[in-house]
Amino acid sequence: MKKQFQLLLTAIMFYTRIPVPASLEYSPERLNRATRYFPFIGWIVGGVGAAVFYGLMQILPLQVSVFLSMLATIFVTGAFHEDGFADFCDGFGGGYTREKILTIMKDSRIGTYGSVGLVGMLGTKFLALQSMPVGVIPLAMVAAHAFSRLMPVLIIFTSWYSRDDETSKSKPIGKKGKRSDLIIAIFFALIPTVFLPWQLMAVALPLALLATLRFKKYSERKIGGYTGDGLGALQQLIELLFYLCLLGVVHFGLL
Image 1: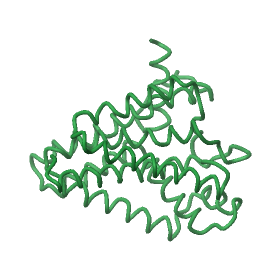
Image 2: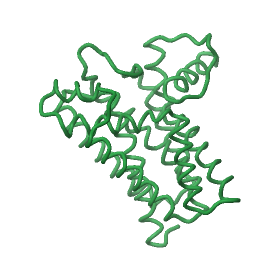
Image 3: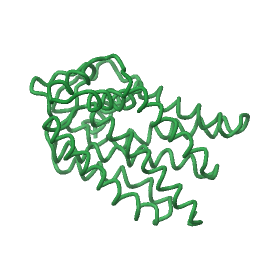
């Protein structure tokens, strides 16, 4: 149990800004095993957003509550995945060779592709959330954040890290661990979805797996594998996909 708690704290340390005990030791092996808790981090991040939304809805309009709850999730992760998405857009939008793409993504500055992509991503997520029934929004945030973090784990288990020197401008990235790590990640990713209509996952799961497969093949063709920025970009894309699928379920009167 102590070992599992240390793995959870390792996941919290690398994927959020939540403080952990300074005595927690880092090791690449522990970070690899901590990928099992990546979807559980979605519970935490989505839970923060849901709590902020619920509290603010008592005193503020819907749109303001949604916007500020989104900011809360960005704050608790330190814009970790949003930064990855912006770098991915810049790298793949402005680079034509593997070396150029990796160089651009390593640059801490944000370019035109990243700016446009980030505004489009956040704007669409905001429009999707504020279009949902009020009572669904908190659960949607928790489920989307958890489910979307499973797809980067699948990439880690089915592809390979692209950077030859394994350098990064920010944090280390977890790599393939044991099969049990993947099973546990799947468990944590799917649990919140059982509280939503089954028709949602009948649509969202196949689409997410297809999008992940296409993303994997595209990244491998362009740069020979995945990077941390790519995993962050995939999380953002799948989170948005989940919201859009849920909107479709709402539109057809299934919720």
